[in-house]
Length: 249
Image 1 (cartoon, rainbow, N blue to C red):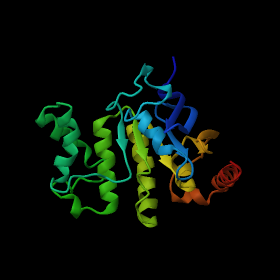
Image 2: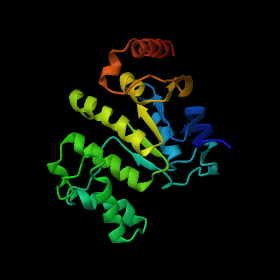
Image 3: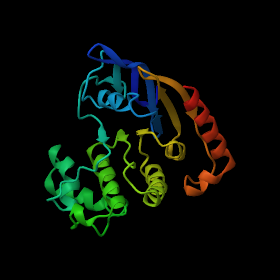
Image 4: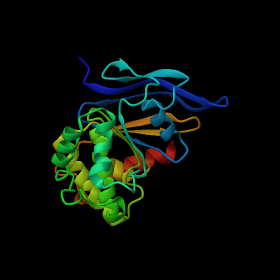
């Protein structure tokens, strides 16, 4: 039996007759974080819209746990670049919203949020409004909200790109720890090479016009996935290999 949670099979998309992405097949296995790396405009977000069901492909299919969900929205969490927290609601109310929309009883929804807030480093922030949160706290909140919407599969579209370098470094180390603890399965869009290497179990390189899969890389670094890893010889060698692929694609 396949351990794949998410599969895209031969996905092609056209706009006004022009192909944007062509014949893309990828898979994300249970407990993996897989990154999709490529330059701006290569079709990464288009692929995410198809995977999330917001758009239908012209060719190909999307499967979740073996079920064809092509063009069916709402089956996976989709975290975009902006946190999209409602400014007029307290954090706890923002986070309870996806559960309430799924008809989870109010008491159970808020119990679940309160249970997870400390795990996501937000234990003292329940009564705060988004404007009172730091950038890192807002992104942790957005990740928690995505997790509450669907624990099966998280689509992350450059969720750390708006953060300053110091905050981002700290948040990436935290995220690696939390995804292992919660056994998250994630597909991450990134244009940041170090971010992709630091977070990923595997990564795909998307390139060309139309966008096609050009390369796949498996990553199995020893030790913790934190900022120190970026100074390791094995990490630097993988970065060099990936830069060569990107330059030649």
